[in-house]
Length: 246
Ligand SMILES: [Cu+2]
Image 1 (spheres, rainbow, N blue to C red):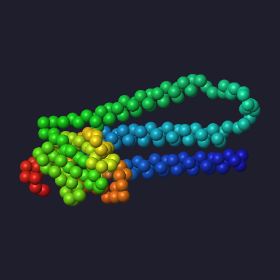
Image 2: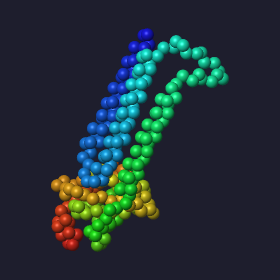
Image 3: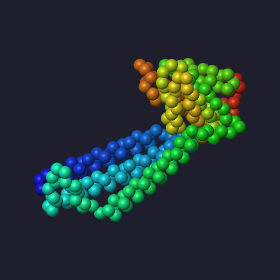
Image 4: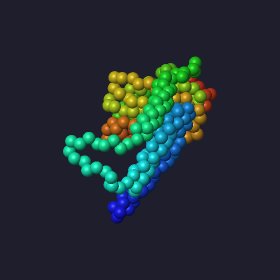
């Protein structure tokens, strides 16, 4: 049983690495500091997939470990070419696993489609407005309904009011980009001659601006295609919007 010990060590090590990896991913994700309902919806979905994935992964590894350490070759027939395998399994277990997997997939599909609906259909109010966002190498161009128009290259943050659903219509003036507000868990593809829509409802006025990122490798300076999002109190935003003054 020398091999048995070695196998046991390998599988136990794999389980440890698996668990550490899951823990690292989860820890990293929590550190992204989500805000608002979009983050709540997204994080719930992430946690559900992460939790189920971890539970299933661990169960499978433990089962492997148990098989590797308890099974022997005794009583097993020698397989020859063309021979059908002898039925050794318990059909009830197979049916039960199939039903459990089906239930998992149904729950995941339901929650996933609900989340997609939430992200794709803006829940606008009378105060809502749409900002046209255009990606260029390597900055974002912002155009408000009243004509205010500037780019992230000026260092100016993208400004929105708190508690007002804001819609983004996103396109590109050159190559593929992706307009991302990581804290609000929004990522909208910016593609030439196509407009994609997304929205957020910022629930906290920001003391510090949130980052705006490009999430599509778009060229040499993709990494510095960064901007800022400033979530302002409604009165401050209205004053800025009326005067066009920062
Ligand atoms: Cu880009």
